[in-house]
Image (tube, rainbow, N blue to C red; front, side):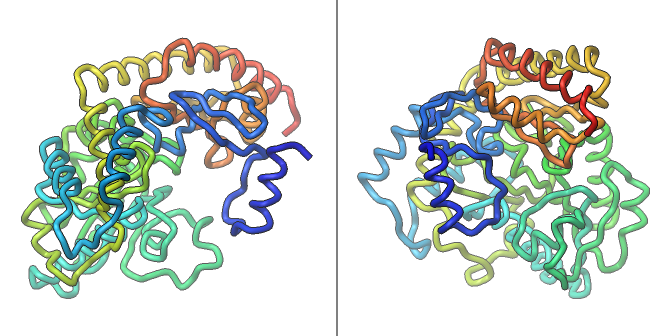
Length: 402
């Protein structure tokens, strides 16, 4: 039994089996690279599922964590928390939102947004307006509220009855959303770019049209930017690409530079509906996570960082397009910035395994979509090194009888 297998055995014996895990145990990371327990090195094109946007163990984030850990780890939100207030101040300076609520994950952020949308509607005197429209192939989380908002049946199996108050419409289809709006609707929630749904990119006018619908019917517009936030699409927030401002935004993943932290934010008009006692999170906005987030945000918003990441993402996209010209098994290349995908006409699980064997970590979603979420500071050299490995695997897959 090798070193990876020993850890895998411990996991199987003592950890809830909610993940289908690959047979390696990652124990160390630096920049764009990680190492398993046996010492094998991998180039990471997964980034903890869009968490490690600065790569692994970025020096600025590590230093901030070490400094804060020596000062104050946790206090209750019954008291003012300096790093939390500073983080909120910084974030509001970079986006439309006036106030932030901090939590611990994307799912918690979604739950917060659902509650806020309904509470705001209630405060406006619309006690019967409780429905939220979400999009087919969306993914908003796995707790009961977020799961009910997620319009993918495969995640619902075994968990019925789902929570009422959600209506689904096809993504990128304005007529369908118009049809879904009723006297019960209070909000529309959408990912500017669908992540888990297959890296689906909307038409240039889609989000603007949703905004217009919300204004016409006096609805709230909620953007789930848990995966797309903090530079993933080439802008700090994906909605900047489409020049549309929501009323509420949800954030997590890359916010903490590797530390667990989530956030829900909105305009003063909407956020005034959250008053003491309406919502809370014991660990939300704790000093350690906020210190890490402040350090990460400083790097992300530093001079030229996002521009370089955007340019590298465009280069990566072109590399994938070249592969598409070489392999008929590829149906489509999709993406924005550093959230990219290859849609295949066959299941892609074997490609993930082939790449792992060669020292590259990639991801497969929706059975036939290879997703790439590398650190934003990945080099073109690293991208180039992946291409022949991908090409070889795709050629082998095209000849298989799968």
